[in-house]
Length: 466
RNA sequence: GCUCCCUUCGUCUAGAGGCCUAGGACACGGCCCUCUCAAGGCUGUAACACCGGUUCGAAUCCGGUAGGGAGCGCCA
Image (cartoon, rainbow, N blue to C red):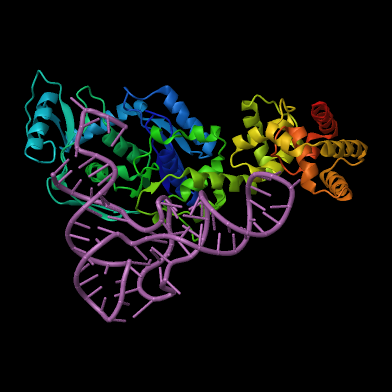
């Protein structure tokens, strides 16, 4: 039987980092076993589900590159099917109508709380066949009264629940709409899901779902409950912890591959390996190796990994990403070749693509001002003369390439008996306005002869006058 | 409150009875390299939650305690 996994987010908010990891694990598992990955939107909560959230989730999945083979399926379009199954359950005596009002249930819970008991439905309509004309009934699943349910979880191992701890959950509201735990069961059954991989906040729901599956005459799938991802303070990841939407990571200049690499290492490892390409993950990842304990999200490590991916990816693959970030800085960059050279020279000095774009703006815009402190430090009358000489020689340089520029500038510094820095810093200041840039030869090469000399002259004139 | 889950450096993790004076990575400190900033190399600080038990021997097995998390909804 071929492996079928599913990712089933509810569109009540954006796709967050925890959801993305669940999706990643489902996707990896399906890919690794040559199976199918199904996307399902759990939008039965009409109140809180939004179209915008659905789009956000789809965009996030697309950005991450987690492509699905089937779906997206929407639960709101499957209401007829849920009704049909509820009918079956009712007919076979696995479900019943409960005419309790919300007030009665609230009272029941209050009484139980007062007695220090676990709040649970007491089954008072379980064996009744009469009705209450003034109350629209809900439908409850008739959970077995005794015995136990064993969840053989791939990550947690054998977990046993007593049926006596479980009450009869509502599967259809009084308005007839089905509830979450029931829809999941029907969907997983209909979509022939073989492996349910989800957050371990669902572990407690699992025995109920298994009981329903059994009542429907279906063998339960394999379950794997993933540990949660916590914020830096050890509490559940939330808005307080900064970026939560995966698209926010894209905007901040993180590479999808790096985010995935970071997430796969949360709760899972393969020896001492830290860097994983997507292919590595598909080849090496196995849910059985996932840890049981929750882990804390660490932006520092994500950032480091991001730079690792920037440095190891083919430069050409980063060109479109750099262009996108430059455009967000208001810069329209056309030349692919030039962008590739920028990537090559900048990637070891930027941790994110956004940072690379910001650091590279000077290639497209002449400096509007110069770092004053640096000018005071690096520009003196002697240096000015030296820079002027460099300008003259550069103008004559036949081959405008980094090696040739390197040779020229080094040679000049050597001939004048000054350190390279003495000459390189003022030139750097003149062409980019600050003290930080790629090596001066590469910087000038990318900038081009005309632009380099023009900036040099402009700066020299300015500094010479003052 | 009840049920279930979890517990190795600040963080992510290795570890499945002797290989552990507990390894790697991020972060942090130092040194080297160096035209700036980085990247890179070397290096330092830093952990088995606690208490019992089993065993010749326990981070690893068992029991308990403490701490954290989740679920207990006509939410998903």
